[in-house]
Amino acid sequence: MKLASAMVKRTLDQFDAEALPDNHPAQPQLSELFGEHTFFLDANGLNIVEPTESSQAKASTWQVVKLASWKDATQTSLMPHDPEPTDIVFTLPPNGPDEAA
Image (cartoon, rainbow, N blue to C red):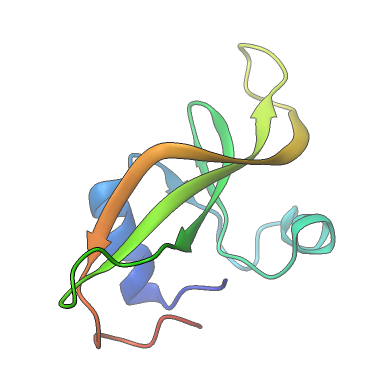
């Protein structure tokens, strides 16, 4: 899912990563491989965030899903794999800015 800039900012407040800008040279290839998403790079690799079932009526729960891991310590090349849900889960308020960009 593509996130609006306000949602990206809220995500990065809770997840130590860097969002790939829409004009990044790798964006077309990533979208072809994984679909239209906002992509995040962290120390472990390439990630997206996906909404989960909310445990509270007043909040939306999101989970980080890893799509590719770094091939080596230089972090210059990624190896795609099946999506792996991570232990990183956070809450964002509902009914805020549009979630999709």
